[in-house]
Image (cartoon, rainbow over the protein chains, first blue to last red):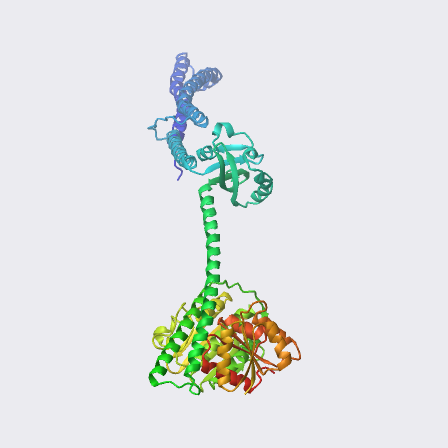
Length: 505
Length: 126
């Protein structure tokens, strides 16, 4: 069903009124005219047929009546139209005025609510709603803008925007504070005037990068402000308009003078420390070397004294010299530990090259073989053919494997076994070294790679070393992107497995 | 038993090692630096050299390398003798200086004799 709204209804009604009214008046007048004419004619005794003859006369009279009443109707319509037009245009004109004012930015426009339930009322009320919404949005935008402006103004960093002709467009309080120049002095001048020499040339390159959407981060320099030289760190990014077109740059400069001074101090302190550290290492090396020579002599002398063939000692004397000899040996080891410690921090920087892991393992085994023979150990080796090569620092990896192999000898029992396997799977080579040694208790397994770990209790005296070995091995393996795993059963033996990433074949 | 050359700049160390080895029946020669060592090798042809690493002028590794490079002397068995016992040093002894063995100080009489006798028994590197 067509819903006829109030205004449409009004128009239809008024139009109907304007047309129908005169017609009704005409119709109302016709009978009296006819009666008058008919009466006049009958009075002279004419029949109805005769009257027909006068119809021409009658029709002329009717015509002039229609004419007059039509004029009257038109006049009436005109009056109604005038009234009605006024009725419609008045609120429209008001709306138009209000829209004009809003367009000019006047937001104080008040539009009264119309209590009319026609299109005009709806239009007015909707317009009013729109104006209010607009006002709200404006207020929200202004609040946000004020908030952002506040952040920019309150920022301790200098925030400066420029256009692509290097002209400064904004200059915040932070910039005023950092440079000592007011915004009024700076806006409209070239940014290059305040750039240090080294940045002037770079800015051209930066602009190219900025146009590509890159951000120039943390560029350090020294600027000369009214307060003297200041170290800054500058971050530059592209300023875009609301359509996303680049229109200039935003630079945030941070005063890093105190950081730079602190860094400088740290650097000096570090250099000094390094120097002292080097001195300490030299000192330790010299001292331990100097100490070791006499200790070796003392120990050797006692060993010779204890030698059955040449000695002529009482039981008590022998016990005392044995005690002294054992303690000297411990002291000597202690000095060894200090020496190793001073070397421990040396950096591991692998220089990677393609190597055959099979060859490296074979070389280690060759080197370890005599020692194993001393303990009458049986070594079985299973190095798979067709192994992929590895990218490793040969010395370091050899060192690490050497250490594991040496452990398998050191902690093995007399006439024990060592099994070495090298294989590959899923782009990894793995090297397993299995011994039949004393084993490591489960509770200790996760500690063996810690620095200074040594097997607990009585064994530590029996097996020399600083405990740095396995920590070092793990560092080396991990520096190569590999892994080291350990499996062990007390009294049965230990298995170390090293995996290293393999090269593509 | 063999003819053993002990190279060490410390006279006392040489003395102790000499006493230990002689007690075990070996013939012992001494040299106090690399230069003297090279001269003695040519003249005496020892079976085994026990070489200190930290010596003034030429270090033990350099001397060992010299010996192994010379066709006339390369068959002499060399064991380094050093206070430095890091694995890198052991490897350097065996790899870079082409020495045959590496004995870490402190020297234990029993261990030294065991190692020396075993080194003299058979050649290590083909």
